[in-house]
Image (cartoon, rainbow, N blue to C red; front, side, top):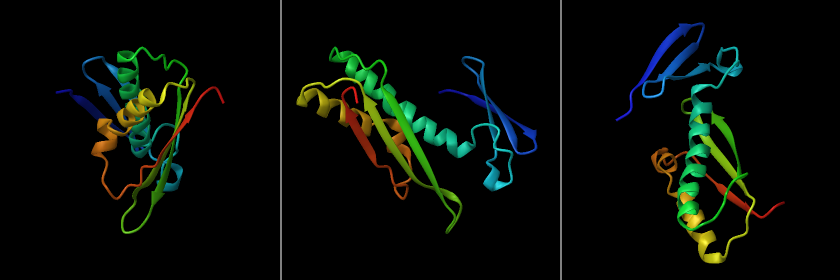
Length: 137
């Protein structure tokens, strides 16, 4: 169990504190939803969590198999929908992986990415395409 404490700071801004480490994250409502857009929105953090989770789970599996993923980049594009309610409609993830492992290891890493807990926790109506780009391109 991990406790996160959140304080509403007013003006559509929150401060979240990760109690085990004391690390703080500020959120702000996006401009298109009455906010200033000066920090991550709550839904931006969902997109961030997805990309970070995929990278972390791939890193765990890569370490087990002696693959160095240092320099891997993950881009997540968040698309919102307005109907029937405002929510995340699609999270498109593109991974740029600076290595070209053998087919067996590549399959293991791709399966690991798609099994990350955040990916598995997202509502099934959210589209979650993931693209893997292997090599130094």
